[in-house]
Image (cartoon, rainbow, N blue to C red; front, side):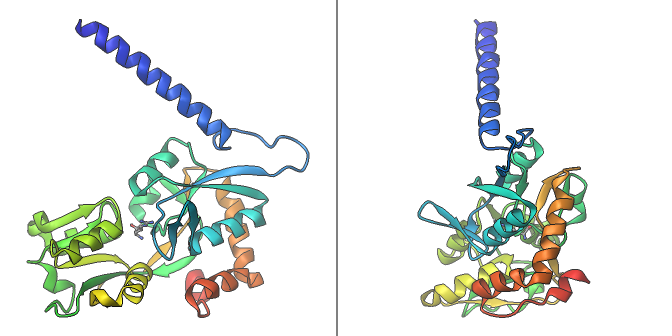
Length: 271
Ligand code: ARG
């Protein structure tokens, strides 16, 4: 009886693997080849589209600064993109298993991640910030030690919360998405959220009736976003070349201005 169940489980897992392998080929990842002629190869890009204005869903469309930039870089490098919203933790799994060719998702380039993945050159300078109710007494990161802090799980904001709260880390509430962490703050289940600057700024701008404010802590380090690839992907060099072209030919600035309404500081990316 027990063995029968086991065998059935193994067969089922086999089937699941086969089906997902087929999916991978259809969408152009792994080793699908240029089908001759001039037809462009399609790459599969994965993202967590719950991070406006960087990547977000609008109906069934995936939009955002990151998405426009990735498409422009892909076009420059001679590829088409198929963009899939898979979620934050899952996007790393998709890259681990090479079911996706690349990811863009405001992913901070960290030493830790560099051990398992390859990154492009930096394409955006950011930092974590603290989102709090207007009437909060929190003034900096140091004030969070005895507070309840909501974060998106496995982000750099989560790491910062862990380093500040230390032995109080039980007061950290990790969520699958940043909007869920913000929801927790709004329903008084948390005192603060730590997340990336462009995203908390956008939230406050679009939701003034919630009476939230963003505060900066100068001890939070500057972070740089990169495109994420499987280790040793040959696409890294191609996308770096493409990104550098976009920096130089004005296309990056054009996309940046469209989303943020101001000129980018490209020098800070090259430093
Ligand atoms: N920059 C942070 C990190 O890399 C958070 C990114 C979260 N991105 C997202 N699309 N949810 O850890």
